[in-house]
Image (cartoon, rainbow, N blue to C red):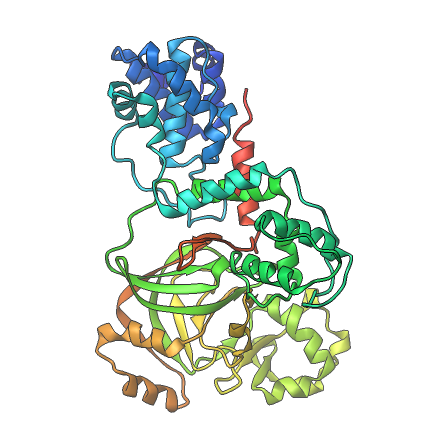
Amino acid sequence: MSRMSRRAVLFGSAAFAVAMPRAARALAVAASPAAAQDVALAADAFLGLGGRFPEAAAQRLAGVLGNAATEGLDPAHYLPGSDQRSLVFAVAQYAYDSGRGRITALPNRPDIVRAAPERHLADTLAAIAASPDPAAALGGLAPATPLYGALKAELARTRAAAGWPDFAAGTTLNPGTRDPRIVAIRDRLAAFDPALPPSRDPEHYDAGLVLVARRFQAAHGLDADGRLGRFSQAILAEQPAARAARLAANIDALRAPPPAPAELSIEVNVPAYHLVAAEGLREVLAMKVVLGRPTRPTPLMHTRMTGAVFNPPWGVPQTLAKEDMLPRLRADPAALQARGFRLYGAGGVEVDPTTVDWRAVRADRFPYVIRQDPGEANALGRVKFNLVNNLDIYMHDTPDRRYFATDIRAFSSGCIRLERPMEMLDLLMAQNNVDRPRLQALIDRRTTSGLSARRPIPARLAYRTADLDAAGGLVLRLDIYRLDAAYARAMAGAATTA
């Protein structure tokens, strides 16, 4: 049996753990089992073929490992010993994490997808060793994109901050107001813009502070109106350690990205409340979307848009029926009836909601099915777009347009409301050679009908809080579902050693 195959057989066993030096053993336990196995096999293959790093390069390689924090990684994962073997294991682990991502999978995060490596990790180690500058070759494995650079720069600035004053979140702070919270907010905004001059009246939300606050809001994907509401206050109150952890999570998410699909595809970025349809790198459609509130989040997924339903009825999910509709039925059942809602009891028999004693109906034993007829008031509007999934998630029109004017558009119960559904319909049905007049005629019939797309469009519901604005500046949005925080915890948890 070869050295590599024997190592593969023994991986995970007590014999393998004992055979490894302490530094290498800690690294193997620190990453996921699959990553640890890849690292161990690559390091052993490199060493088994006589590979080694020149002694002259060892110190500089150790310097790259020791500066892992500048790349959003934890230096504790890459602690080489004094021998060549432990250095190889540390470099292998760093090469894996820097080039492929420290976190490769998380629960409920199907949007985390890494590109297949272009070469075996052992070959990467050999290329580093053969390089005229092994340390530069190791450092060069990190992405070289503008967003990666912007995140690194912001991470360095954030870590340099000793801390920002705490303040109690509360009512919206409007320009010109006076409030004790302004003192702490002024200090926080001074860290964002060091050119902010001190004030003789630190509790006054003066014009100079408003200008900086508006820039701060724009840099965090919020309406730059200077009004500091609960979302602005939540980001202002984020302390450096938590912000740095989110930045590191976003940095890691950029590693080994898959290539952009060449064919037409749709991506919804949840924290941006934005949809883009593109062919390769060419954007063909973009619009605002309204997504699930934090208590009913829009699930992330890879799926396909398969067709459209015109004048759809709405079958109210039971969770919404119990939590949202029951209180309304108790208050005024006739009002819901007037909006086209129908009630069905046992055996599918329709029940007049005004005849039910709603005070006696319990949410945990809700015995009815609620359905809304197609029409102007229908929650799905005039068009529904089918997505392949078992969670009853779809895209749709909406009669309620007010939320598209807001910055944080997390108001739905999980499905995706489209700002311009007819343009999405044009895109979907162009392949069917069905033009807008025919589509409009189907809608104007006021009866439920549908069309299937000849070629379903791939769709991805993803979560990315960091991006660049049109001028190349970093935008770090609110972590509305706390998924950045979960990613950061996973990165920190991966530091546990044996």
